[in-house]
Length: 143
Image 1 (cartoon, one colour):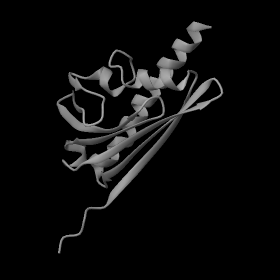
Image 2: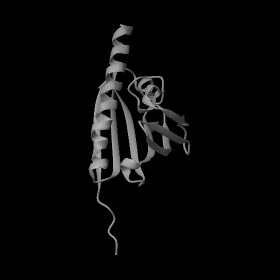
Image 3: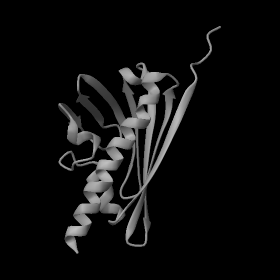
Image 4: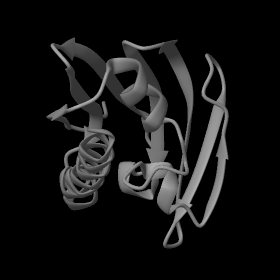
């Protein structure tokens, strides 16, 4: 009897000085630096329930489909790539208004517990850092 592979989950939080709707929209906009979609070598993106995405970056294809799109509060999509060993994992992103800022939380679950799977922690930190910096700079310039 084969045991199911052990999986891990990563959680990230960032506070972004912008309204939740603005942060939600920016996260889905491939023109905004810091989103995963922005650095694509090739991108197909249809962010609606059952909409598909295909994201190619540095020869590594990622794909999945949106399972929840609740603007401005929540997104959920499946995520598969060579780094998930072809297994389906789940990305859930929530946007909670905190005064004039938004608490953005990203949870990536069902990732295989292996070197490739653990690489998602560094990847998400990279993108979330750039995204937070980009939106922080944009909010600062508005003032």
